[in-house]
Image 1 (cartoon, rainbow, N blue to C red):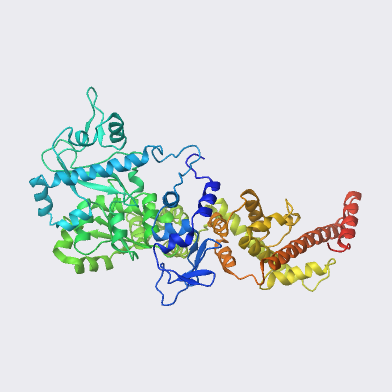
Image 2: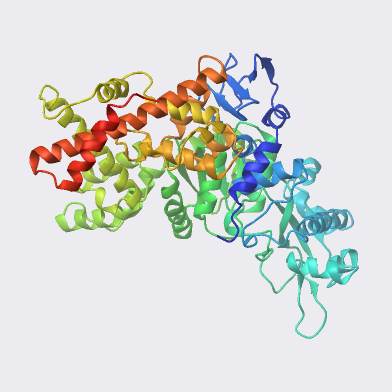
Length: 609
């Protein structure tokens, strides 16, 4: 898949980067035996429950459950996207990130550093020009901006010239090409390219790592063009996945309690200056699903501020459609509609922080706005009206991730429509498969309990032990997974494919998948294994197993691991014997199957080696 980072590169990266060094640059760690400890940076606590393991190359908090590799830590602490975290770690050790088939959303690697540097120089040029333009300085002064906030946002001015930036930076064909690639020049139909931004106050747009990737410009004088002009889509800038001022928000406070989404550059900057440094803005586009995920990755509570008119409410509804598929448990979205003729910039000047806080506290929760919007032209006093509301809402609610919020939205819809409708039909194939598996396990459990006292076919001592283990604290499968997770090199002790891959026990599929992973990626670390399985439902359980202490020295653990594999193999053999005996009792066996049964019984009676 083009643009994908190979897992082999990620393994190599995690093997060469020391997670202790990465984390210690951001929080204070103390040596604690073989590991390091600290107060968790992801939740408030008084005692140190955050542990970093240099041997296993992962971290874990026993308080809030935060865990992962160096990649995951950068994603959560620095709030980076996965590719950005990879780039950050690779840059530490001088590695060039490899992308399969070429990266789709970035400039060629040879150009990218130069393009970043050139756009940063462009921001510097506009800042310099601002000091030379009284009209631009007067504009910012009239808007109430102080020098500190102007410097923090690197505000500037594009001179009323067709080639001001071009002459300042475009000193070679290569640089002219980069300026065009970065959206700073427009190719002339007949002549040479010219500056895109002219006679405008300039707002640099920075990515999540603080690098300038684009610009927004507001017209200052008379101009036939739009009042606001943004850079076009470029290899570095995709407006549907970037937020203005997110970098400043993250710099202002490490622990975000909320993010406020507004519509304009000046709204954002005014809120920051007057005491609400949690404001960001979309970049001339409606809220996208990428925006929603980015917002929630940084903070669990998001407030959307829109005008109270029809256009504002339509924009809010588009935000709802983007947010709903990202509403996992713990996340909340609120909608604040402003009075006619007002915007966040004007309100915070008039009412101050206290007034804005009061408005935010009374913002409309997502669920309330959702149903108010859907019920706007529906008569719930009629059966047809209730049916219409149900049809309008079902698909949207079924797109919400499984959890408490979706359950509550379904309950509200049932209360409003008196329609008992099933969500199962709209589940994804993966979710249906999980639901069916859970149901099958429950049925099997009930059946086993019902038949507990009946002797339908012989059960070996090994099978009885397996049943006891399944309800005990440490089953054989669990022990094998734990040992392989903490000592991935043990995979060399396993014949492949393992005979127990057909054993019907919880966790066998995961164990086999882990064996395949360790075989395919020799030298893989515990942290890398956890990273690979970070999206499966059992990820949390794997993390706990990685943190558990295996008693004894590594040789003793190795011996126990080998013994567990032998017992699993014997249980698999006994499972096949039991299946054949059941089939013999119910329908009889053919000669081939009888030969197989005799051979298996003979193998079972042989001494274990």
